[in-house]
Length: 77
Image (cartoon, rainbow, N blue to C red; front, side, top):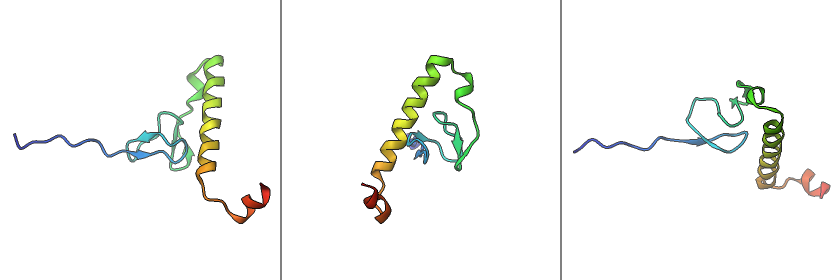
């Protein structure tokens, strides 16, 4: 009973923030190392595409809000 299963080491995707295994493309957004590897929208129908685009846009807005404010962003607000 000295064999233990360790949980998988997950990292967050830099594009969408979802947990993903290291050195693999994200299944949610299809990006790996800041490049689009998998076209996730290609296999979706029209209605699913709209929902996915809205979800991705909301996630990008949330990530930008979490970033620290710079002088340029302060002058814009």
